[in-house]
Every structure is written in C-alpha cells, then in structure tokens.
Amino acid sequence: MTIEVIEVNAFGHGYCVVHQDDGTSFGQHFHGLPVDDAAAFDAMLADHVDQAVLRNTPLAPKVIAADVMSRIGVKQDRPVKIA
Image 1 (cartoon, rainbow, N blue to C red):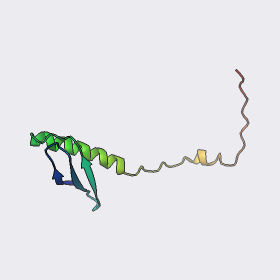
Image 2: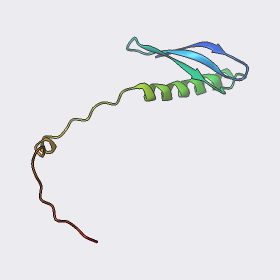
Image 3: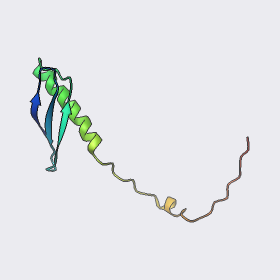
Image 4: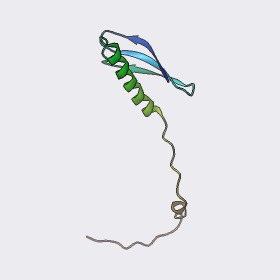
C-alpha cells in the first residue's frame, strides 16, 4: 500500500490517495495532522489511513455450520419460563 499526499495546509488538513496492493485506490481526507514534524505527520497519516482501510474492507462472510443449517424448518419445543 502506498499513500500519495495530494494537498495539506498549515492546519494539518488535507487529502491523500491510498493505492492498495490489489490495484484499487481511494481518496481520504485528513484533519489536524502535525505539519511541523515530518515523522509525526507520517505516523499519524499512516494510522489514519489504516483506520480508513479497515472501515472500507468488506467483512468476510461466516460459514454457517451444518448443524445450524439442519435446524431450518424444524420446529423445536421449548418450555416457557415465567418469572
């Protein structure tokens, strides 16, 4: 993954493009990054982008267990608990 900073102003607000390893890319705004320290800027930008990637990554579907699938359409008698 690479991050291309497109714009940043004196307040640490700006825009970057994130190029992912699978060939896709997306734009990401950022706000309040420290512009007076390059190492801190890079670290905070990387953290911000990591969070954006996690938000944009689709969740992997769970595999439904066979014993759960076997319950479809089967009536189950359960006692009623009255408090």
